[in-house]
Image (cartoon, rainbow, N blue to C red; front, side, top):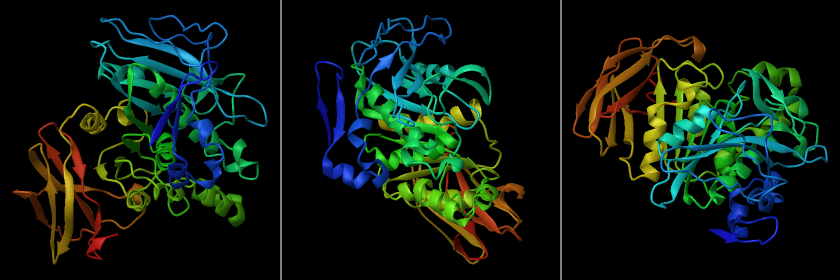
Length: 430
C-alpha cells in the first residue's frame, strides 16, 4: 500500500510503500534508498530552457512541489530541475518538462512518466502529446543534459550525474555512481513528483520508455509498484544472450560482463513485475532482438500484451512515442477505454497454427507473419498471409518452409495485438 505523509517544511508529500511491499518489490541495490526514491524532492527553477510558447517556470529559491495550474483553454508546460541522487558524493539535478492537460471541472487526471532512449533527452512535444489526451505528463533527461543542442549531442548541465548509456565502463565504481542506478532513480523520483500534484490521480499513473528508456521501464516496473501500467518500446532484458551489446560484453571480459548482467540486466528485475505491461517492438530490431524480448516478457507475473510489427523501425518521434497501441493500453486503465485483445491460448497441430482470444473490440482481421530464414533476427525477411477468424479463434496453415511465425490481430481501432512467436521446427514457442 502507498501511504501519504505530509511534511510542513521541505517535503510536502511523501509516497511510500509498506516495508513488506518494499522488500517484495525492490532489488537489494535499491533497498536502502527506497524511502528516498518514493519522496518528493526539491525542485529548482530552470533558466536555460524554455518550453515552446511559454516562459520558463520561476521557483525563486526552491519549492517542494511545482505549482502547476492550467486554464480552461490551454495546456500548461513548465521546465524544472528536481533533486536527484548524489553522484561521487555531490548533489545532482534532473531536467524535466512537466505538463498538465486542460482543466476539467476540478477532476483529477491520470499521469504518465516518459523516458527517452539513446541519443534523446526530455522532449516537450512528447509531454504535449499526452496532455492533449488528458494526461498529466513528465519527460525527464536521464543523462544529465538539457534539450539544447542536437540529437545525440545535447548540452550537459552543471548538476549532471553519470553520462549514458548502459554504464558498462562504470561497473567497478560504487553502484550509486553508475548510470543505470541514476537512470532508474530518476524515473522513480519523477513518478513521485508527478503523482504529488493535486491535479493528478496517484492511482492512475503509468510509464512508457523507448529503447534505453524501455530498458529503464523494465527495471523501474520491477521496483516501483505504484505504476498502474508500463509500456516498454523495444527495451528488454537478456542483453548478454542477444542484443546490440554482445561485442561490448566481450570487450569487458567475462568477469565484468557477468557482474554488469547480474546487477543491471532487466531480467534481474522483471520477475518482480506485477504491473500490467505492454511490449512493443519490430521483428527486425537489432538492439533488442525478439528472442530476448520473448524471454523478458515471460518473466513478469502480471498481465502482458504484445505488439510486434514487421515494419517497425527503431527510433524516437512517432516511431517510439506514438504507436496507437500505447494510447489505447493507457486509456484502458485510466479512462475505462476498451481493453486490448487478450490472447488466451496458442499452439501448433501438424501444419496448422492457431490461437484463441478475448476482445471487447471487434477483431476485424488477423494475419500470420512468418519467416523462412534462420539467420540473425535483424536480417530475416518476413512475409504475411491472411488468417481465418472463427468466433474467438484464429488459425492458418503454416506456409511451406516457414521457420518461425506468429499472429497479429487487428481490431476496429486499428490496434494490433500479437501472439508469441512460435518456432515451427519445434512446434512450440521458442
